[in-house]
Image (cartoon, rainbow, N blue to C red; front, side):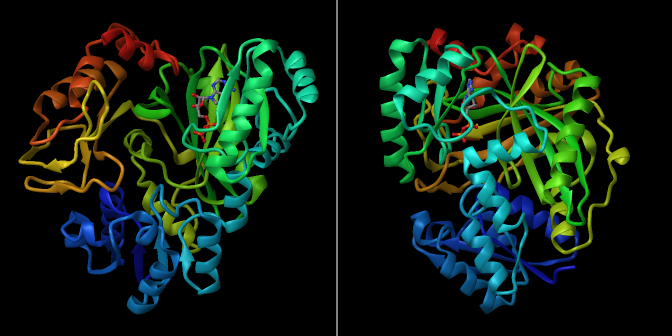
Length: 447
Ligand code: ADP
């Protein structure tokens, strides 16, 4: 087992990882920018190293500084959290070259899944159902026309190097294709320095369903069920649930089984998420994330298993603490991402939190690094906390969520809490009846 883990992140996820390390009796080092000197994870860590000024590229993305911090403190492993360097293959390779364990998959697996064309090809080879579309990159308009006609309109043009929902264009008919292809390519080139694009069938009313998988490091793979993350705004997840209200036990075990086998065949190690669009009873692979997800706590709530403990165990060569048959799904969980944003316009609202009071009681978990008197720096994302609620079934979970939202107090800044108070009272949400476009439509109606 590791002696000392360096946490290369900030905010709630740095604290989340720190908690897991403390429980396992592992020493912790955190790195931070000058803007985060007063952050909770810095206060609670055994050691901290300031690695640079506020902009992420000079601090949380500065590989050189982070490796130096490992060497100064003698850390033998790095947990990257999510975002920042968590899916950076070069970072994983550099750590390996310094004999420091990257708590995550190999650089090669990160590289494959970071290239969406390669990821889709790999998924297909491993028997994972994919969205019908081009086999690889498409450059010629004639070829695009032929493929689109074959799969049928509407189609979506996506950037191979894409991320964060950027570089995607929908063509509803052949007349839109040329302009969609051109704009997707130039946006992809500008945003990612790589203008490779591919085409796939555009699904009109899908749900976003993702499967939590784990490779044990010895060639075995398991799944921890799925999460439904269909409630999105601008392709950003807002509310996540486990299990999905749309799946039955047979579908769950079928798609989970396919994913677990694929992970084993790939020889993948550590946590991963295989993301699908789901429509009319069919799953369509869109991408795989090779890291811990923001929404992992809903899976922890229904399985009772600490996924960060498992990541650390696997990375240290100890394998998983559970086998597939030990993983049971118990009740229902919902996570609300609470952002420091105006709940109607979603403009960021940094500033000082004058009062912070979190709800409590059975089935409530709040993952947050903020506190009364904390000043939210303007440099990073606006997530200030996650409210995770668990109940014996979805109805109990929703009732508990409603009262937890009533108890939650954040003063001094604007937050998205009022949005969740509206959502929890909505009939479609109560029925679990929503697709990936539902929230955008709901917000458009309210304005
Ligand atoms: P990114 O890595 O940029 O987030 P994804 O491939 O995960 O890109 O897609 C992000 C979102 O775009 C999906 O959650 C979905 O809302 C939409 N999307 C992607 N592919 C399709 C598709 N074939 N049909 C319909 N919507 C899609």
